[in-house]
Structure formats: C-alpha cells, structure tokens
Length: 319
Image 1: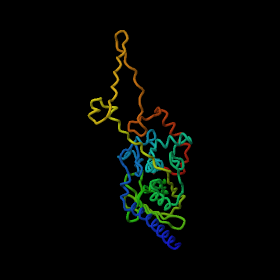
Image 2 (image 1 turned 90 degrees about the vertical axis):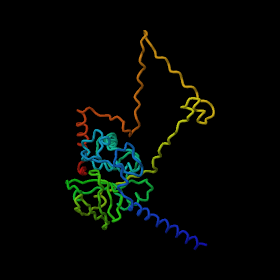
Image 3 (image 1 turned 120 degrees about the horizontal axis):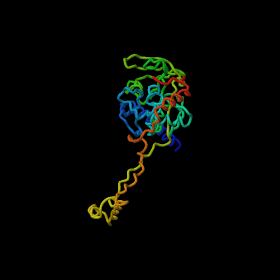
C-alpha cells in the first residue's frame, strides 16, 4: 500500500514538474509583441503591458501619460518601465501618477523602484527566478525590469538604460519593451557563475556584449496578492426607465412609477430665474477626459528642477 501511495505521489510530482516548462514553452512560442498595447489606453488591461514611450517625437508618445513631467520623459526610462510593469498587473500608474506618489512621500521625483502604489517590489532578484515567477505566477508577478549598464546601452549615450523583459523568442533571445523605441529589443542572457553574460542586439544588427551581476542589472519585479476584480456592469431594470405601457410590452409584471412632473421655472418680477449650475462631475480616474491639474507655468520649472536637485543622478537615468 505504501509503495502504491509513493508511486502515485511520484507521478503527481513529475506531472507538476512537466507542466511548468510547458507554460514556459507556451510563453516562448507566443508573439511577445502581442503582449503590448501601443495605443493610448486610459485603463490598463491585466495580462498586457501598456506601452509608455519616453521620446516625444515618436508616434507612440502620449503626453497624457506624463502630464507636467513630459519635458523630462527623455530621462525617465526607469519610470516608464515601472509604469509598464505595473500595468501588466492591472494597476493604473502612469508616469505622472508615479511622480506625484514619490513627491508626496519623499519630496522628489525619480524612479524609486522599491516604492510603488498597490504592489510589492522585489529588488535584485536573480533573473531566471524572476522569469519563473512571471511565467508561472498566474498573472500575479510582473515582467522583469532590467538595467542595461552603459556599455550595454544600445544607444551608447554613456548612460544606463532600463527595459522591461516580457517574452522570449524561439531562438532563445529575450524580448524587452524599450521605452525609447516601440520595437522590442532583443537580448541574450546566460548565467555565467555568479554573474550573467549579456548580449544586446542594436537596431543596426551590432551585438553589444558584457558581463554583469544581479546588482549591476538592478533586476526588479512587482507582485500582487490578487488581481483587481473588474466592477460588474449592472443593466438598468426596464421598469425603471420605460413608461408603463412599454414596460408591459417588455413582459414585465406591475407598472412603473410615473415620471415626476418637472417643476415650473421660478420667476422674479415676471422674468425667469436661471437654475443654479450643477457641480461639475469629475470623470473616473484614467478617463481620457480627466482634467489635468497644471501648476502655473512659472512654477513648473522651479518645482521640477527642485525635484531633480534632490535626486541622486548617479543611478544613471535616461537613454
């Protein structure tokens, strides 16, 4: 009997072990570009990456994502990647939202990877462990934010550059969303002792190669305990919106209450008095009609410059 139970347990364990690589193969076979939403999206969809571009001249750049910080988007590849990673978890955190979050909590704006709204951050996670979390985490783990050191920056600007690793091609190359350009970046990552051998393929086909450890790559991943549950759409009861005769035609029992008689327009001295203008109803957060709360123009440069003066630029933001 004990042997039978042991054999069954072994079969179950082997089945579970075999199922995990199958999910990884499935992720590798899928088109990574299909995971990315490049159009303007006021609300992210869990399981897809809402692309955030940092280059104002690109067609995929949406100033609505950046708000008053749009002028500095070119330096904030890290902020763009954090926003994209959180969008995969269904969290609506546009770059301007992250800026306000960091300013309210720390007094400055800059990619603070460990402190984000609605998710927990895991920093310096070994790359392949983070990838396994992402592939097998039932949507509760984000794609992997990865820092390319200056020598591996595909644009060779002398700065580091952040990208978001979100898929893998059949030839083994990893696919990364790059906030500098909408085309996915191809890179190879191989374990080499306690570090990684990293190769980055540039737009002209040049291969940049170098070694980096987990700390140098500044690997970051976000996770949540549960995915957000969309609010159910409630259809109105026809009895509440149809006149009594139409409600009967719709197969409803009973009658609807009669519509209220409009109040007469008040007059003073025989002249109509206009009704008070109702308070403006603000659209939900994330709506394309959501009004921006701009600072006076003369204060914006002062506020942003002060924010950047407090930020340690040694971390090498920008492209």
